[in-house]
Length: 137
Image (cartoon, rainbow, N blue to C red):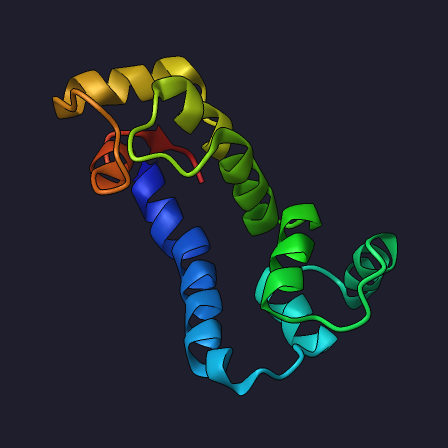
């Protein structure tokens, strides 16, 4: 049986790393972001990207509008991002926050906290928490 940490490292983290690397290498160029790249980074179709851009009357995709598309997209990474924003960018999370963001039952989060001896959940110890959450892949 795998842990949620395994799932996170294999499915979520690589996408976040690609997005981070993209912005680190493209940040100072000031160029617009192509729909192909946006679609690939966010794992959504070009049609979906175009629909979101039309809805918000966005003509060119830049760093700011990238995150609007990310917040509105239907892919897994987009949904995590949206729930994270709705919860807030916190220094400390409740089990309820983590349950909502990652769609894991709250009682499983609470059990993992006990098993891992975590008194609180922070961005720095999320990996520890995730290593105590067992999932079936």
